[in-house]
Length: 213
Ligand SMILES: [Zn+2]
Image (cartoon, rainbow, N blue to C red; front, side):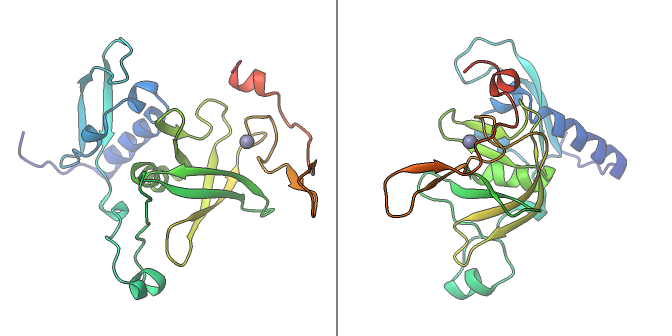
């Protein structure tokens, strides 16, 4: 090794396709963060033992080289952050940034989730929403289980770049695990501590899509 080999664009595109598929592979999701940081080579092939503690068989994994286009510029001064052309997202103390998914056509809010640096990079790379699940502590490629993928139409960030709005094309019946199109199906009745449904219709059967939970 050691000699850098330049490859054909078609070959690289094909490998990206492989990665697109493998991002949904549970083995891939268990690749330790430190391996994801090893990005000096185009890709890393190998075998690993899952760190999640489950005695799964070792599997082949494939980690793409981080695209230099998708490396975030370190945050500069207020003027650069507010007016500059560099995307320098601010991740909170837990390494997360909130991402609000909005339907690109109807502008209806769909869901709120969080991304860490790596999931945001993967989102940029594949053009589909990849969140970080705080409860499961793993990458969450939205739609990997349900097929309800969110295709990224546009990503916006706010003035201080500590929040994201994803304008998405929601594929499939809906974004919410309750079977609704949107997670925001209720509103607070004005001046009260009560909720009322604004679009309670379930567009799919969550049990059939996600299995029992
Ligand atoms: Zn929901």
